[in-house]
Image 1: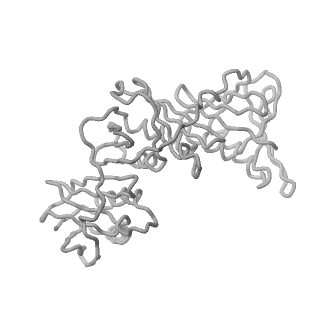
Image 2: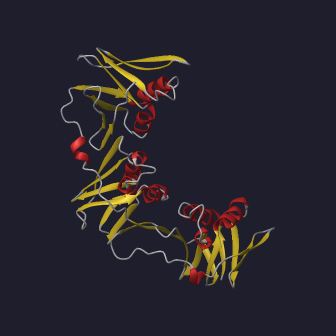
Length: 365
């Protein structure tokens, strides 16, 4: 195989592959990227056996067809440090030679026949989602998914598909985020629920942006595949039952305030500066015409930030983990959002427009 590759396109493909490749594995071949020719394009692929990615690079001159499997870390480092606009890659008997204007490298690779196959996207998708709204929905939900949990269903994001509506929902048991998307046209199938792994959701957010791009998505048995432009993702789905979250969405709250997004984010961050490891919380005091954000730690002191609000109801106090509030407020795209509160022992509810909903459990201070 002999290729002349555009360096920026080469680097972008390797960066995308690197988001899939595991940091440690008993199978060294999984820490490699596969590079193969396919007619007039070069296809980069990577997998950890659960999640796979294919990236097509058109900015390449294929002088000899072939197939190579190369350790990603070494190859990526060479490409990243090279300043030339083009890079020549040659492969023969699992040995790869990289040539630039003033440098030559030799990397020992693996037999491409031993590399696990990465599924390609076939046929038309079951549903189509504009890329930019999907990325925004991922940002507004993925942060709430469990990082490590014995309840595997919480280690992913729930997709609820019904006609032209798609709900993305994530929770770690202490907070829950839901974002609703309106699809350009009704999904063909499946109507129902699937749980997509957090790693796969993060990859959707890494797809190169294009204002007009659309993601085609299909589901087959226990897998999801998504294609957008020159990138195709595939992964297994998470098994298990997602909590029936609709039952915990408060519907009887009477205390409601509208908060400026940037001001509220600043107030929470400043109040959290003097919270302690023991308390891990800040207090929100809702009073007539104002809301106070405060914290107190015996060993450091106390903080109090006041924000004017339009409110004329009964006073109340409630405690929250400040990081849980920060995570939600900073992904909001609107200038303001609603906060709904009940009793101090009941969860807080944040709403932003018709699409975003966030529930956060209170803490005892």
